[in-house]
Image (cartoon, rainbow, N blue to C red; front, side, top):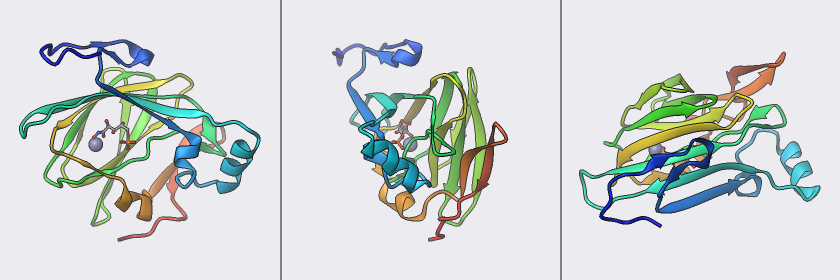
Length: 191
Ligand code: PAN
Ligand code: ZN
């Protein structure tokens, strides 16, 4: 699939990148504890549906100083009132930052550090968002089409999903009056 000697890949839009090394698919069943409306989650799953929320096409490298590239495609939709999003994570190596580059679609990136600082950025075609070291990050698709973005991050970053899963993000993105709205997360617990 990927010739390790080649350093070129191509952005295919909602098809991700090609070639890539690995593909990760996240279905609703993989994220049942993430969405705020647990009842909506269980209703969807018990009706036999299990929507694909997002896919990540990744090329990872090994040595310190090398850079990984990931292309994420978040499919449009909501669970209850809440727009589809990525799980979100801190980097295990807290000294590592990241850059997100918007390819297509419309969305937001939520960022939050362990002291409670919170930041939100827009992701759309051509936007470049810097995620500073120490900030957990989650992308949210607020549009009607796939949200596609590239992520570039150090090969030794590592992904800590556990911490943010325990606390949640301070804000969530829901539809209110037909529009994406950032509201306080009622289940947020500060570390
Ligand atoms: C991204 C994310 C990707 C999927 O490549 O890994 O958008 O999100 P989750 O990893 O939170 O499921 C990145 O931030 N890499 O470090
Ligand atoms: Zn990351």
